[in-house]
Image 1 (cartoon, rainbow, N blue to C red):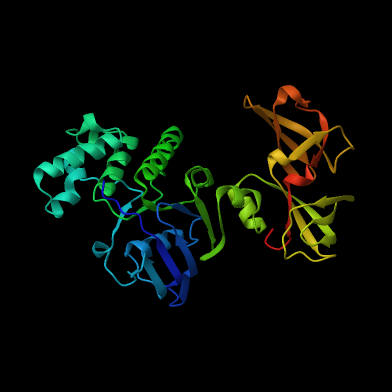
Image 2: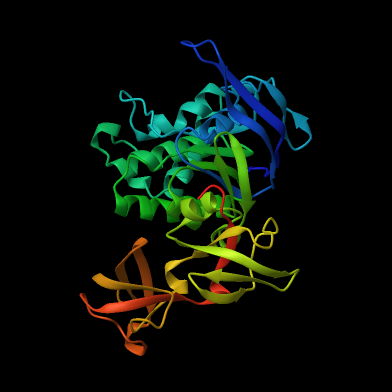
Length: 367
C-alpha cells in the first residue's frame, strides 16, 4: 500500500465567526498550536462547542483559519481547497450513496481519479477485506447494519490512500457494543497502515482507548495535551480531571511545598503529603485533592476523612464499585480484587479516605 505518513502542524491557528444575530465576533478556536507526528493518532476531546470539530474542519479545508498556518509536513496547506489536500475525512453521518452498492461506494474516489479498472477492482476488494466486508461487495447500503455502513465509509476514505485521515465523531450513531468493536477496528487498521490520523470525539472512553495522544479543548482553547495515561493521572486542572474520568474532589488548604518532592495539604482536618501537585499552588491558598475511584478507600466510621453510608454496590468481577452518600454528595469508590479486601455492605456506615500516591493537588479555581 502506498500510504505515506506525514505530520500535521497547526501554528497559532484561530477561527472567528460572526454571530448573525448580535453581529459580534465569536472565537471558536483560539490559538491552536500542536503537531501530529507521522503515523500517530491524536484525539481532539472536549464538550460540545469547544472548537474540536472546527479545528478538524480547518485541517480538512472546509473552514479557513482567521489567523495562523496549517502544514502537512513542510507544505503550507492553509488556503488550499479540500480536494488539493492529501487528506480524507470520515463523517459522523456515513454519507453513503444509496443508489450504489458497497463496491461502487468504495470505488467512487478511485473512479474520480481515473484508476484503471483492474487496479480499481483489486484495491476495492483489498480494502473491503481489511474492514471485514469482502463478501458484501454487491449489497446496497440499505441492507447493512450501522457498523457495516461505518466500515464502508472508512474503506472509502482509506482507499484513496491519503497521508492524513480525519475522523469526526464517526461512532456516535452506533450502539455501545458496536462502538466498542469499531474502536478496536479503527485502531488496528490505523496502526497497520501507519496512517496519520486526527480523531474528534466528546467520549472520553473512545479517546482513552484509541489515542496515542489526547488534546483536551475547552471554550476554543487547548487546555492540555498528553498521552491517555498522562491526561488521566496528571490533569492540569479540575476541568480536565473531571472531563477525562470519574473523580472526587476534596477541598484542601496548602500547608507547605517542597519543590520537586511533595505538597503538604490539610484535608478536612487531616494532613497529607502528596507527591503530585500543580506548580501553580501556593502556601496558604485553597486547593482541590483529585481522587479517582481507584485511589479511594473505605474504612470503618471515623477512621477516614469523611463519613458516609454505602448506598449501592455494583459487582464487576475484577472490582466492586461502591457508591457512598456523604455530606459532600455521592462518592464512587472502586474496590479492586474484592476477594482480598473488605467489602462494606449496602446500608453500612463507612468512612472515605484516599491513597496519597494516587492523587494530585490542583488549584481550586475552575472547580
